[in-house]
Image 1: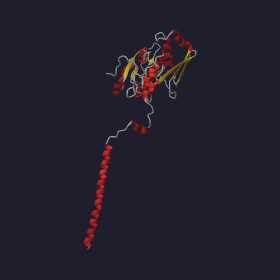
Image 2 (image 1 turned 135 degrees about the vertical axis):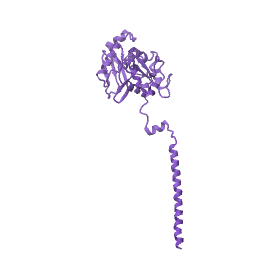
Image 3 (image 1 turned 90 degrees about the vertical axis):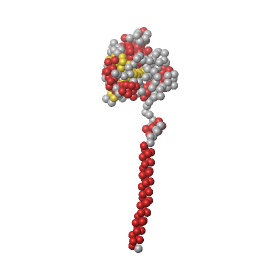
Length: 294
């Protein structure tokens, strides 16, 4: 009897161990299935991403195109301690006595750039195609308001000279600025374009904003070697030494209307937007442009 009693628990122990063994196998199978599921690629749609992160804060390329839809607006580039940034310049004219108002938290050096740009334009009204009456109006009967948006951010430096000159010329001639071009460079009273700093940061900022053509001072060509190859491969650069070259490259033909430009910017005009939001240039091809640096 003692032997039988001793054997019973042993058999019972074997019976108890059987379910435990089976449970372990089930857990292992579940773990393997979970690992396989985790390794499988997960496809996320735009709607899925927006559900998690919220809607996009902005669409850089389309935002740029939609902001440059009338004469007097140009896109510049700035370098800050945090990297490069795009810099819009807006100019408007009203009846007055030749006064110039500047807003947008700009410091002394940038104010000097505005004065240099105005002097160059006034000295070259005939070359710009402005009639004598228009030049007299500019000097005597028109007030100009030059604004640099994002007024909470202090702005200074000479590199907005070409952008200011382009915006002013655009307004006074009634010609739109291309919405696929950004620019940087200091100007002199003779119209020379001088080199500036922060080229790498500025070009990267243009690339980030979806702009693929940048006008740069000729003397800054050497700085392009600092750019990441991916950026170089996707950008076009027009190297300029005179502000007249900037104006020729930046302004669209006189026969392109505001409505046509607005249609192109929204992707529903005769010149559609590309899939990634970049715009087809407005029938104003640039001269041969280097796309890389040897």
